Image (tube, rainbow, N blue to C red; front, side, top):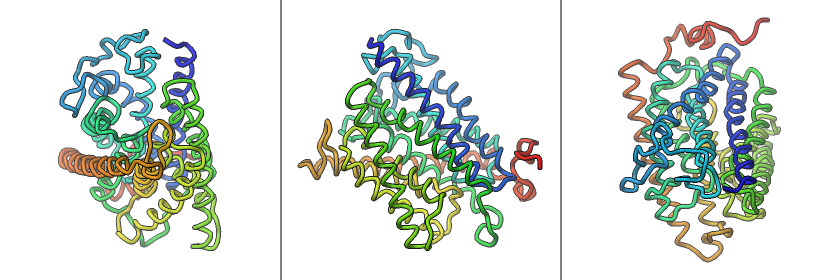
Length: 400
């Protein structure tokens, strides 16, 4: 055990944990005031639900002994064999508990990301059931495929910190959720405006801060690779903020604070799979491109007619897809991509992208339909009109 590495990863785990409340604030500022607490709750409760599921069965399914390249066994169920030393730890420099809890924080935020797609209209109880099933049947297999000894990692797919496992999976599930739940009442007919953009900007700042733990921590060691991932994370986010407001300025005539925050998030998403595999200048290029790609992706939903309330598909889905592909193009640290002489890596990345989208979309769509049949997905029209804060939680966010 390396005590410096252990301290570093524990701090990184805390940073990633802080991202989920940050996401809650980011999302909550974008909805109407009558849904602020309901939106916060949908993200915040994942810290409770997913943490327990992860300890009981999720970690074992993701990182247990490989079964056919598809899923882990139950040898780590109830954290059996997950102790304070390095025995059985996937990272031989870290206590097994440290590795487990670091990965837990990734599992927590991923279903929280999905909630932005159906903000302001889903039953809380149905969300809990869906999130439980989704974590076990979608997230855990994806984590095993990429990081736990499954077929995608064995194929050579590069995903440093979760382009496929976190962002593409949540983007695909978000698209399925938006299609299954339908549009919000009044969508496209009346203004549905953010009620508190300062809250969203604060949430974006917390996410940016926590993302250093997300990406640099994925080096699993306090070394030069972590430094590289930290630097590429900062540069990609900065470049994407500039490119997003640049294209927004040209398209709408004025740059917005929401555009700057969305651009930062787009850059952070895109650099996630590449952070430890590319250099600083490549990170800037990836960030610049992600700002434009995700901006256009957000515009696409109005053309296609689906109501992805908080742009999960456009930012996490498309941003994660671009990041995974860009990894196959720009990789030069520890692996090489197309632009550094290895065309095969780009092809491997494409296979992983297609497989991730197909698996996560089909499974998520099926789970939404099952939950809808059993419990119903949407609140009643009257409850939606009064807002989820009152109808689902019997409280209000503001007393004015």
